[in-house]
Length: 244
Image (cartoon, rainbow, N blue to C red; front, side, top):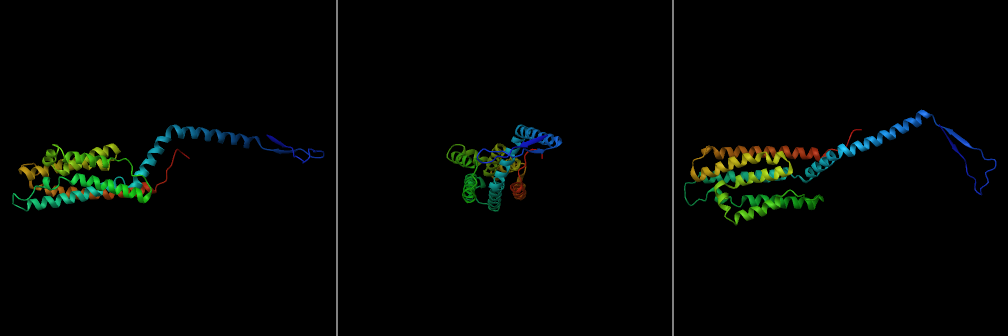
């Protein structure tokens, strides 16, 4: 293939000027056309197949930067430690004047959700990353409704730990985060058993319920560490789309 270039002289006079011809091998031109066609096909394939994966990767990195999993797990771990201390103090007392754990911890779910919501807001202000729409503020509002209505009876019977587990199941399923919803059912079973034992002394875990709650607290702490390490890896990973 050849390309002709005709020089231009100011004033419109081109006498004596020669036509310059640049020869380009046909193989090079064909290769350029093939590469361009390949790039176009690759771009279309990326748009059709890789865009959802790209958006999902961005969402995971955004949640990792916000610590949307490790922070709630950390706050729940601290809440479980408070529940363990409260249950231990109750079992060491033999007085009807000592409030049961369910009575002492009725406001624990509300406190947990408010703390998580506040921490997310503070982090959003400090880092410039939005707080997201994870639903912790909504759970705090629901907790207020439960405390101020006849639903507080269920909170007394099943205990605060049960409702913390229920909240993890609901929000973890909404966010598709197994590290959040996974511990939820265990919290619900152990929390209800511990609370019912304190009330009736007749559940299948019996006096071991507090010990199981301690083990669960340690397990949730380990899950928090796993979630934090995963967030660090995810936040530092590069976003890749399609195939090179």
